[in-house]
Image (cartoon, rainbow, N blue to C red; front, side, top):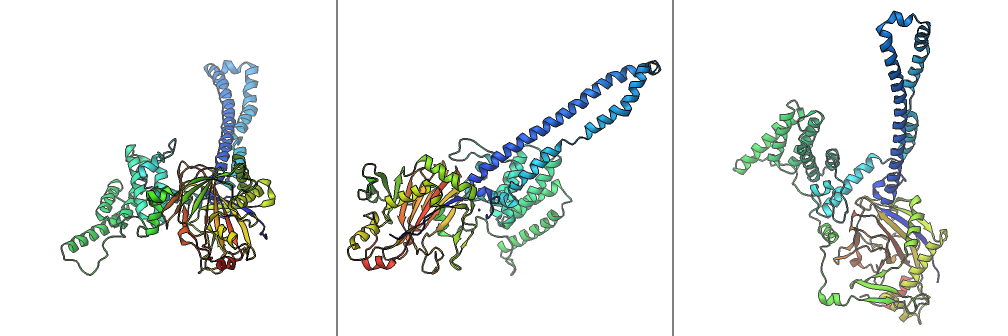
Length: 562
C-alpha cells in the first residue's frame, strides 16, 4: 500500500507564533515559568544575603565607633593628648571613612539585575496577561461560575484554592472593559469593590484611589447594560469620595438627563429620541443556539440517549480480525455513541510512551493553526487556543510505534483492513473486484490545553465550499479522526459533538475514533465537535487524522454509512 510519509504533530492547546508568546495557552510552557520563578526567588535571596552582609559590616563599624566616640567626647582634650588616639583619629577620617564610603556605595544589585534581565526575555507579555484574563471569563461563562467562586479559587475538581486580590479582580474587569464586554467588566469591578469594602480601607490613602477607579469603570459598565439607576448610584458614590472627578461630574449630569427622558417615555411623553439606555445587558452571543448547546454539553447537560439506544452500546475485546499483534492481547473497545459510531480504545498507550511524546514535543511548540476556507492556507485563530510541534516518524521509535498501532487497531492499512466500522467492511466486500484505495495516515497532532484552552465547534473534514482543503498535503480529505487522551482532567475539557449532543470525557491512555466521511465521500456533518475549556487540570491530547486517496473506489462500492 502506498502511504505518504507519516508525521507526528504535537500540539499544546490554550494561543502565538513564537516560543515566548501566549504562554498561558500551554500548561506545558507555563511549568517552565514556575521553574524560572523559583530561580528568580533564589537570586533574590542571594541579593538579600549580600545586602545583609554589607549592612552587617556597616553595623559592626558603627557599633565600634559609637563606643569610641562616646569615650572621646567626655574629655576631648585629655583623649587627644594621647598621641596614639590622635593618630588613630587622623587615620580613621583619612582612610577608614573612605573605605566605609566604598562599602556603602558597593552595588550588590548588579548580579541580581543581570540575571533578571536575561530571564525577562522569557517573561509573559501584556498580551499573555490579557489572554489569561479572557480565559477566566471564558471559563466563567462555560461553566456558569460566579465571580465569588472564581475569585476565591474554590473550583470544582480543585484540591486547593488560589484567591484573587483586589488588583487582580480589577485587572480582569479592565480586560473585559477593553473588549467592550461590559457584562463581565461590571461583574469583576463589583467583586473588586466587595473585596475593598471587606477590608474596610475604602477611605484610606492608596485604597481610596483604587475605589474611585473601580467605581469609574463600574458606573459606565452598568450604564452600557441599560442600568441607569445603578450607574447613577455608583457615580454618586464616586463623587462623594472625590468631588473633583471631572468625568464623573459630567457623567452624572448625562445619566440624570437620560433617566429624566426615560421616565418621560414611560409616562408617554417621550420624543423621537429613543436612545436612553446603553446596550442591553447580558452576555454577548447568547442568541447563538450552537454556543448554548456547546456550553450545555461542556457542563455535562447534554442529550440523554434512550434506554433502548444505550443498551446497544457495548464493550468488547477487539483484535481487528485476529490481527497477529492482538490475537493474544486484544485491545479494550467501548462504544461511546451509535450514530455516528464513535468508539473508545482503553489503555491503548503506555505511560512511558505518553511521557516521551510530551518530551519530544515541548521544545518545539508553536501556535496551532486552522485551515482557512477562503485561502486554503493554515492560519492562527482566536477560537483555537493551542500550540503545536511536528515530529517525524523517524525521530524516535515511540512515534513510529504509535503510528503502527493506529494502523493495526483501526485496520486502515488495507493489508490488514478487516471490518472496523462500515467503511472497512465495505473495503473487504469490494476487494475482489476493485483495486485497493490509497489511504494515507496523515499527521498526528498532540495538544496540551492551558488556561481556558479550547477549540470551538468545527469539522475535521474539508467541505464542498472548501475546494482547496488540505491541497498542500496532497492526501485528499480527512476520512477519520483518532483522538488520544494523554492526561486525566479533574474538571472540564470534554470533547463534545454539538450536532448530536454527545460529550466524551478525557481518560488518560484511551483514544476515541470516528469516521468523518460517509462511504460516498460526502462529509458527515454529525461529526461537528469541539474541545471544551479545561477548568482544572493539564490536558494533553493528540489527533491523528487519516486522509484518503481514491474516493472513487468507495463511491463505486455504494456502501451506506450507519
